[in-house]
Image (cartoon, rainbow, N blue to C red):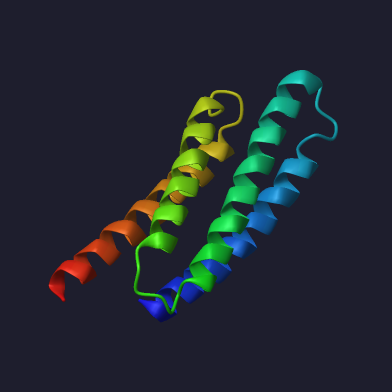
Length: 118
């Protein structure tokens, strides 16, 4: 689980950079800037949550406690809810929000299953 958390943490940081650039670029050349500012801000917050979760997963990869997984799950749940609230405005954000939910829940459930096995 240590190596997996490290790898997924690095992938989440790279995805945070991609989501951040995507949120910046989508604001240029749009005819209705008010709607796109709202969606871009939501995407910026999701990218920051991805970055924070990736850092938490990397920092807690060697710890056996549930603290890092609970923090990661809570941040991923927030980004999931934020993505669902804005999915009618900007559809690609729905992809990032569902991916966040899958990552957060999978790590939390996996860690609980490992603790019960021991």
